[in-house]
Image 1 (tube, rainbow, N blue to C red):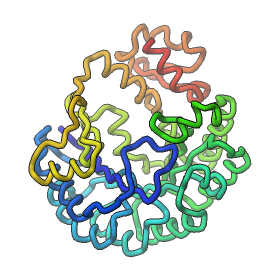
Image 2: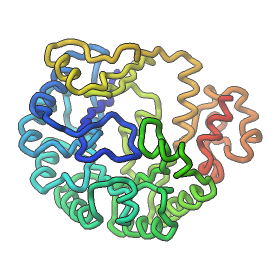
Image 3: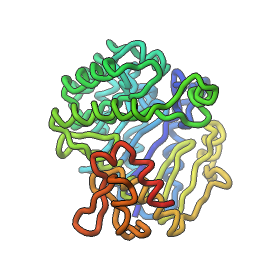
Image 4: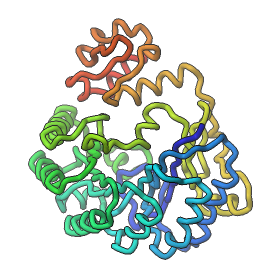
Length: 366
C-alpha cells in the first residue's frame, strides 16, 4: 500500500554548487503545462493501491511556482492524489520565493509543514553555498511562514562548509533556536558527484576533516538538546510530536511514489526513476505515455534490502532490527563501541556511534 507521495519540482533561480538533485532554471517552461503533467502522471499511475498519509513537495524550488498557478492547480492535485484530513503535507521553501499570499494559498490547500532552506545566517557561508538569499530575507520568510499558521516549520541548516568557522556555526544554531522552530535539519556537507563542489574537492581545493565534522555535529546535538528537541535521526531534531512522518516512512522502508522529472519511487521492493528531462517528461505525461527513465528499474533482493535497512534505520533513534544484521551478536564489539543493544532485538547507535554512523553501517554489512 502506497502511503507516501513525493512531488519533484525541478526549477531553481540559481543552481547551488553542492546540490546533486535534478534541477534547472525554468527558462521558457510552460508552468501550467508542467503542473498538468504532474497531475496526468499521478492519474495514470498504476503501480499500486494508494492511501496517502504524507505528501512532500521537494526540488529544486517548489515555491518558485507562482501563487496564481498554485491557486489554480492545487485543488485538482488534492482531488487526484486523494489528500484528506490528517495528511502531513510538507513543502520546501526558498526564503526568496515566499510571499504572504503564496503562504496563504499553500495553507488553504492543506499544506501542514514547511521546510525553510536557511542553510546559514552567515552571509559569507551563504555566498560560498551559492544561495540567492540574504539573512534578512530568511528572517522575513520565517515571519511570513509563522504568520500563515502552518502546523510545523522546519529550518534546514548545513555545516562543514568551506570557509565556515565553528563560531559562525554556533551563531547560526543560536539564532535558529532562538526563533523557536518546530524542527531542525542540520546536514554535514558532502561532496556529491556531478556538482561544482565535487570538482573542487577532486582538485584538492576543498577537503574533509572528520575531527572538524565531529566538532560541528557536537554543537548541534548539544544545543538542540538544551532547547528540548529530540534527536530522532542523525540529521534531524524535533520538538516532541513534530517529527517528520514522511521521512520516517522513507527510513522505515515504506512504499512511496515519486512523481515529476527525476523522481524516484519504491513499491513492493521495486524501484524506478522518472526521466531527468523536463521537456520530454511533460510531452510524455501529457500524452498519457510512460515517464519512466529506461534502465532504471531495480528489483531489490533480500541482500540489497537488508543493506539499505542498515544504512537508513541505523541512523534513527529506533535503530535497526537484528534480523538485518549478519552476525549481529558481535556487532557491539566489532564497531568499537559504536552500537548498543536495546530490547534484545534492535541495535542503536551510541553517542560515539552517531559521529561515525556511515562507517558503522558500512562495517556491519562488510
